[in-house]
Amino acid sequence: MTSIKQWFVGHQYWIILAVLFISFLTLRLPGLDIPYHQDEYKWPLYANPAVFAPGSVPHPPLTELIYRVGGHAIGYDNFRMIPLGFSVLNFLLVAYAGYLMFGKRGSLWISGLFTFSFYGLLASLTVDVDGAVMVFFFLSALVCYLNFKSKEYRVSKSTIFWLLGFIISIALGFLIKLSFIIPIGVFATDFFLEKGYFKNKKKILLSLGYSVVGLLSLGLLVYLSQFLFPFFRLGWSIGYWDTFIKFSHRGWFQTGIQFAKALMYLSPFLVLVPLLSTKELYKQNRIFWLFIGYGLVFYLFLFDFSIGALDRYFAFLVVPLCFIVGSVFAKESESSDGRVAIQKRDTVFILLLSSIIFGSQFLAHSVPPQHPKAEWINAITSMHWNFLFPFTGGSGPTGFYMSFFLIGITWVISFLFVLFVRTKPRFKKVILFFLLVLGILYNGVFIEEYVYGRINGSPYGLFANAKNFIIENKDITQVVVYNDIGGYEIRETGKYARRMYATPQFSAEYEKYFSTFSGHVLYIDIPRIGKDTMYMNYFNTCQVIYSDTDKNVHATIYDCRK
Image (cartoon, rainbow, N blue to C red):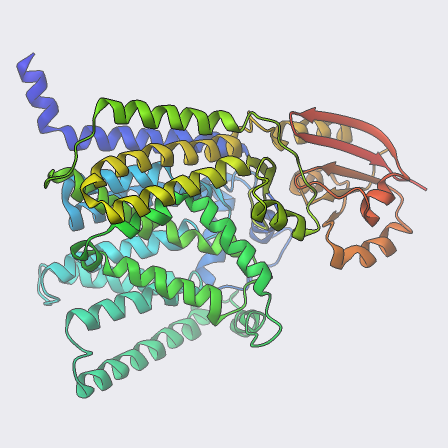
């Protein structure tokens, strides 16, 4: 018995890491069958040479190459395996980088947070490159950089491998997407700070010179890549970025909405706990704070991404916040340092509070329509939080509902806990325990509703049944798909007419379209359309031939043939 215990203690790090890895896969594998949503299904279409010619993706060539090779290898209906595969590698790199920076304890905390983060899970299942693929090249560059940095940046036989690995990771990352300039700038700034390049004018000018040379080298890399990858169209890739260069009439409201959604995805746990970092941890995590700062400036202010899937771009925040928060917990768990220890009554209190918060989502909730947005804001500001908030986006998720009361009350309580420990630091260990439990609850409910939807309803089963009805009904030949829920699979049936967004700015366009339309409409109501709108008024002129319900989600097929 003693030998078993000794063996466990000796291998404790690897055992816990293995459990976390199994948990990582267990949480994500059920999401592989989630239907492609809106922009997601562009990738299997772009990757299929029978649909689009090579060179259709407006990003540097490595992005298209990954999905073309992947599509050929795993099939066009299994594209979620590509970001998940990169995410598996990301888990291993996160664990290794955490070990390099904060030891075994820090590595386990950081890996655990990365495992159970809802935003991290969403990123690992989203068919694109922002949440998993680009993160892989950042992490691979980080691991190489940390090893090279530990040797004081000296080039030798023992460090040349890490230096070359860093250069290759940076180059490949930039050939994925031009926004990889963010981590490149982060590494450059950290290096200049470490070497004291901002201490005098001469060194500042030298750092500017290095930066110019680096930017020119990256530009040359992209230019030469069109000869290595003949399908890559450099002019189109550059022109694509013109879309996001706006200095007036920017979509600030939409940008704010998307950023708020990203914060809700992150959870108050990952957003607020960094406020409890020490000066020592701020310095140790400098590279991640730079990443967060540069990234927010890039996506919020430097370019206008309000017309894009901005909530998908913000997934870059997950990794740096997991490192920052994980290091806070690792540091706090090392020693008591006069802190008030966690008592049995503390455990009872937080479990009781969590149970009340969890149970609150089973109270009566309203489901307001998508528009007008002012109603959502008024409900939030007037504290009428017992409504279901729809989460959906251009590249996913397909759509799920969450109790805004659960979201709002968790944020408020977490903020008060953080505020309390800022004034009473001796309770830091207890408050971090409270925040951890609330964080697990918050992220757990998000994950459950996204993957399964057992509390508020799920569109996946509803769509599967509606799809079978559409396939079997020979009278259905043209289907308009609301919010493009299941659009890819309807397209595969050959009955897809177009997608429909029920927004006020498109009402005139759709009114003209529907005036001559003769077909059917698939309406899965995430988010719901307002009753007194052009869209619902049109649906009321059609015949309901199919309906199905899963809790608060409804699927309806309208026969709108004239």
